[in-house]
Length: 359
Image (cartoon, rainbow, N blue to C red; front, side, top):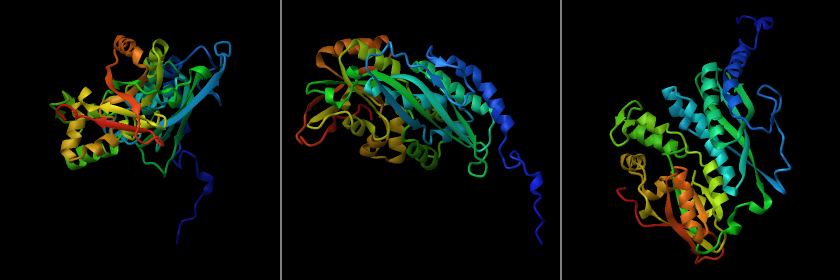
């Protein structure tokens, strides 16, 4: 005979949701969020809505841009190593570097963190990384939400996403319509895997090769775990500085789908982007994944950035100026190809030629 349930003794905490822990997390993260601000922000963290006063005197014909993204299964590595601040940087990069492709200046970002159980120190570390990323991108962290999901997510597990909003003048909006034959492709180096392809990377390195995250890897000069958690490079301010100094037609953020697919998104019908692989050498982590997993080059290029995190499509007469701007900002950059007429005028294409050195 089953024991009757005494509903009068049921509590939210007993069901797995700890409001007090959530409040403690908010108090711990407030100092980080306060640092990631802009003059247009009204109020602070803790309100029902984030307030941002758009300065219309600064813009003649403003166009708002928005982007939403997450970090994918890179989070599994962070959870295994109990290192969480770098994930926050990754999250900001994935959002703001999509915004800047159209020339938009990131204004603010709001995050969403879903957890099995709130551990205040862990949430604070995550938000510290997000706040640091917002500072690097020049945008405000305007608030967010932390939701505890007992029964759906186990303790120690979390996922993150964020939405960012940016603004660009209508007459400075970048995109495929600006691209012309003869334009030059300037590649900007990635810091590593960034935040795409981790399901394949983890499968190869951890499951097939059985490499421990704590193990030292000679090619890296540090552990495998440290390599897999290298934060995604944030290009937002660099791209905006470049667009202010040179004739940039558009940018391509190299994320899931790799170089060819993401370049094709910003090339108009009738034109082709031709990238020469001989112009750079991918970082050792890409070769390690390809070798240990016997991953074909086509699959590698469809899954990973292969060492290029962003591409600027630039007018040919401004190539030297563009390279000088990026060099001064300590962004590794080089001429990687050009835009030319396509054989198939009904679609846009991106082609990779040549071969990676030592890959």
